[in-house]
Length: 606
Image 1 (cartoon, rainbow, N blue to C red):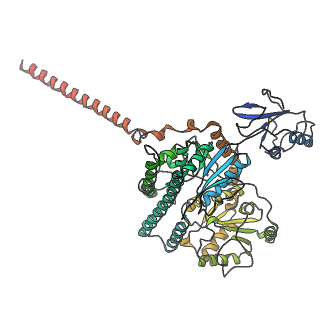
Image 2: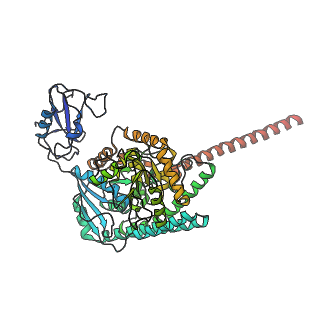
């Protein structure tokens, strides 16, 4: 195809867009993107944009101007007489642009955080980018060999899984027995110890990387375009700082607390701290408690997490560095949330909301699962999964759950590991793994019993499936509370859990229509976006690679001292000036008064 400048496009033109500015081709470019322009005689083509994105190896987007039908958001209005087959055949014969993607260094966090990161890696790989993942040898989720990425494995002796499991069991025990004030402080201390251990392990791994001169030279020679990392642990931020790479955060949490707290105004009067269990409508007492929860977060950062990173900054960076400043200086925040799910709050221009980015339309189930689901008839099925905490519940609770399931007319698919419940009914299928997204989107699914992890909650919203939540720890109660506030879920805490309470709560979710109606309303709100969350995330990832960062979106507030940020210095100046004026005025009045009195006394004497 010849090289020519773009012309005005009408109803007989389409644009074939290559996804990245580093593609090399004999086509023309606008704003750093490369395009094929294809002109057509008038024809009649319906709903081909989605199909054509896979027409050439370098994934593309077909943009059709002025052709949208009012019948359906996915259909295109008639073009004339060019047949569908002719158009597809023509485009398939187009030479694919010679593309080379960017080079992305990924420093992930293990566990459920990796599940989110892997989704982004899959999409980046599909778009031709080269991915390198830094992982510990003790990782329990991040595999060393993958067709998606090349791994750099750092030898480790320990991982955090045992610490998390111990804390979780203690947390579950405390919830069931009731949490007194003393128990609350004990659990808080234990939680802070677990957090401290996590950051110590992360920094030990980072020190091994920095001390390996050969590895560091290979990383520098690789000339990566970007660091993609999770700020829950700050190893990726420090490595990016060392390699001088632009940073994109796959975030919801940072080293201490929720991510917004580091970069956006976060008034405690209506923004609940994670773990407080409050909504954005707090009473006076709740606002006091929210402030106390915030003080724990501040203590965690300044006295638990901060010193760990200060030590490694002092050792490997001349002049040291501050971990919170590195978090704040990230170019783009890909926030795993949105305001269909979360409470409204202030934000910043470099925060990109991609809640539900991992969600996709349901695909057909494997034959055995489909047969089981269809055997439920009009009663439908219930899905139960605790995600990565699949084997967390004590045996007596799983027996009670199985007993309740056995009494229901619905069929149940339960992701379960460990001892088989003794009360398991014939209507319940235990599986080690399930295609959760496809089951949630199945028309036979009636309810989702879940622990409230972010992934499961977002998938339930996407598919419009009401939730019965059994929160276990950390942010899960807060996640479920957001759905409960919108009438789309019901929470059953472990402190109140028994067979009858579980049966009553499950029956409510199954039989009360507002739960499903409200969740389906949230689903419609989530779907009604100009750009899909994944497309938005990919655009900004490639934006950072194209422009070597996004510093123009970062606020200068992060570089201001606290007294300037809150205008304390200005206020003090104004108070001093006002006080000076008042003092001067008072002195002037006093002098005038004395002068007047003297003059009056002299007049009387004369």
